[in-house]
Length: 251
Image (tube, rainbow, N blue to C red; front, side):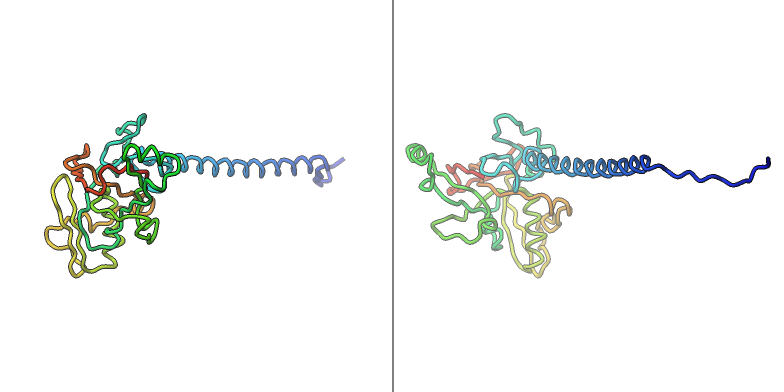
């Protein structure tokens, strides 16, 4: 007999349809589970990086070391286990000491909050050993304080990259005339702006904003100026203030 030439159409069984549906659901579930794993892994990685930031020389504000008395500025560290050479980025290594300024943001940059009388556990120990205790912070973080709640301290030390950010991104767009005096590598310097333009002899680096990622993602605290004549390993030229000496800071 001659072939009719009619092709037969195979209809999938009910079991095959169920298997296909289960496979599709499993594929969607596996894809969602993989996305959840990716997001959770990135979250943990970012959290760990943020906690390790001070030890890597990345930033010193908004990290896990708050109230730990950890000091990594100037290319040195007071950590008992993690050495200073782990600061591979070095943003906090080069510091300057602010000695005088007419910029309110810089005048109130370093504040000491509290005191020995406000300690609850170690108050007796601190008083017997004549230890002054206080929390060193920025006035911008704690807002306006009553006189009995905190003291604004100057001079103070601050990483150069943070001073660049404060001047170029937050001061120059607002103020047309201002000045800041500071010491760097043991030598006095003066940065002055008149009619919106830095004067001759001013360090042009302070008028140049750091890269976008540094401005937005990294922030550095100010610290009490080091004892007179002390220098960081990078030649930061820190000098002391009578108010800052003998204070046990907890930042």
